[in-house]
Structures are given as C-alpha cells and as structure tokens.
Length: 118
Image 1: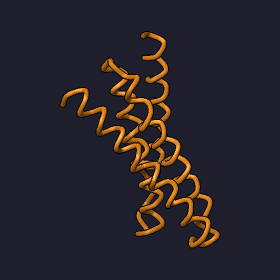
Image 2: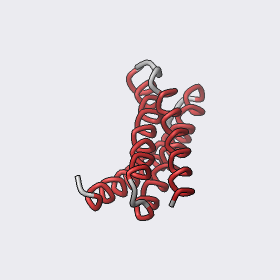
Image 3: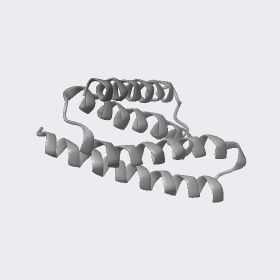
Image 4: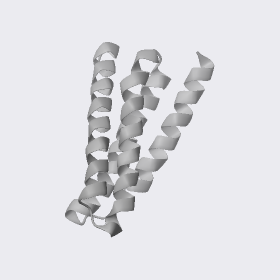
C-alpha cells in the first residue's frame, strides 16, 4: 500500500470515528439507560478524540514508525470503543477493551518517539 493510500485511509477512518463518537455521545446522553451511560460516553470520547487525531496527523507522518503509531491508534480505537459498544448492543464481553486501550497508549508513545526523532 502506498503512503498516499494509507494517508487517505487513515484520514477517512478518522472522519468515521469522529462522526461515530458524536453519534454515540448523543445516544448515550438521550437514549441509553443510566447504567450504560458512563461506559458509552467513554467509548464516544475515545472515538471522537482519536478520530480527530487520525484526521489531522497523517499529513505529518513520513516514516514507518509514524505510520505504525497511527495504525495502532486506529486499531486501538476500534477495539476499545467497539468492544464497549458491542457489549452494550449485543451483550458481548469487554475483554478486548483493555488491549485496545493499551494499543492507544503505545501508539501515542510511538508517535512521540517518532516526533522526537524527526
């Protein structure tokens, strides 16, 4: 996959995550029961913030380390937020959420390392 294709895919992913974060936040505020509201708001916040990051940051990346960091953010967001939503909607377990959160932390650390090394 070319760098330009990966850049466009990550930016599009960011737009999708950000829009999903807004929609999920609205759902949590207006339709979710009180017990699920907090976890759904957390999933919405992670999706929205990382969506914005993925929409903006690919323009700055040119090295493999930076691309790996952004891919970790994309996958980590899907695992963290997606697992919480799946648990609410389908009663699935949330075992993958901590792995997604860990990927997010590692992705941001890797992005910082790449920025320092540029």
